[in-house]
Length: 158
Image 1: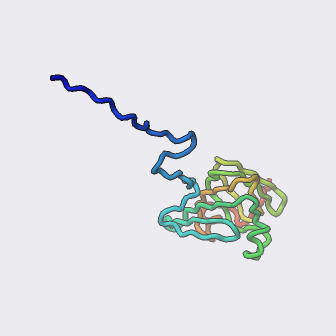
Image 2: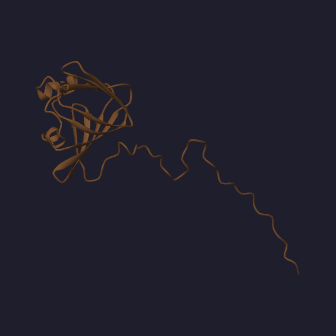
Image 3: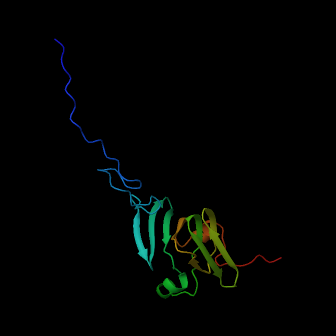
């Protein structure tokens, strides 16, 4: 005797989520890896700037996130008490655009992705509406000396 196949009950086909929506059970990733917390880092916020610091021997590796609208002379000068930023910055601009000017009027501008060196004695600001993310290498107050940079910006004289 032959078995008769019973028709399958009409089932629901698996629903696909609309384009741009995550599938059920998966939450959308809202964190940007470039901005996500860094495991083991000391996190600080100063003048609206977010800084993650990792020790590396006698130096530090820092991820510095400057928000849109940030300007050193507006947001940091009142806290620091100097007319210009007297720290050297050596690193890699991973995102965004920054512009600045030294005390002598010499100007600079960097757009990501780009390695950069900014000597002490500058004002700097974020250009545009996205944060500037700088991966910086420093030796705290000894950065200029450790990297062989002048203690303050100056032009080479002939």
